[in-house]
Length: 437
Image 1 (spheres, one colour):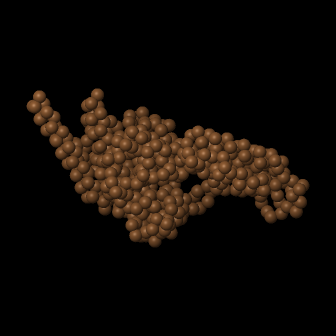
Image 2 (tube, one colour):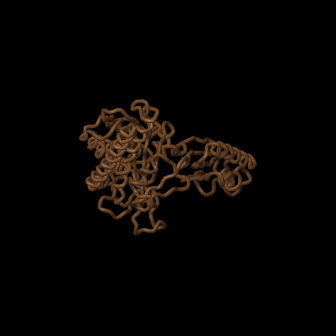
Image 3 (cartoon, helix red, strand yellow):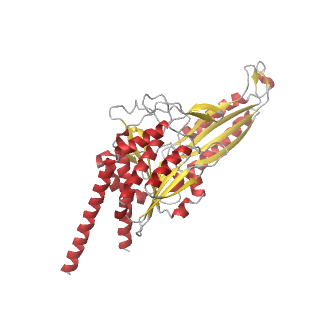
């Protein structure tokens, strides 16, 4: 009995020591490639591409993965790149994801690698900028791929590096993003068991990590409301039906859905009209007016209720004025859901990589993420990585999707370390669970 106990103690001690050696290796290798990760990010930042048009970005990533000797697939979901590291030893298949696309935003940050790229978006000439940090995500995952490949002999299972296009949404009339990757069979093709992803945050201090179990980010749905009235001269509105006035009443009515008809103590919800168009000149009341907007919900039951109330509100307000409202609601991204068991299992990992004092538990966020499509298929864990300079106030940090968006590159090494450590620790916990069965 004593011999068995001693043997078990030696085995546990060896396992802890081996785990410590792997962590030390991850830390040292991540620090060693910090300048490379920054260089990759600056190249990508200076050469942004819009959704489903990430051709050069995909080539840049694919070249790096080939140089690492990984098995790669290109062209998934148009421009997606998938690399696989097969350790040759049994274990789970862990996927790590980065999104590649930029936004139709003209940069005005004064940095040497600022984007000067112009392109066409919805028929208009626009500037193109990585105004949401996807260049950082790609560079961090390129770094994690390099570190983990160099450590192949210490790892088990398979690791899938997913460089995903079109997170910001495919152009009208096209499919794209994580949803299309799932549709094209990425989960079954690679046998993915679990998915990890991160997002840089311009409002979170560099060095910190932010997360939330269960519903972390909102479902995002799009609506179009067309109000049809009766065209007439602007000087005699009583001889027609004014769809612009009716539309303005509908907009105000939509806001009462949130403020007076939604259980906001349960979860947050948002209805926003982002565009309204109708008419051609000052003295003509037009026949039709169109509104386009977004719906954000964090609960699927509330999502259905809000959709129905939007239809009821728009149709009835229009009818009361003698107009007709046509309502089209298209479901977009689901709720970004962090599997609670997986989140609890990986919490010690992020506490170790960032330090317990640097872990922030957030309230639900009404922004949306198409990582949600992956996390709907298998357990997923998605977290935010701090990118705000410490000498900048949270209130002065430029928001995402704006021309002044700026990221402190000092947090990239933490991102690389954390992605690598999540893989190692998840595999370790799976091995322990298998051994106990």
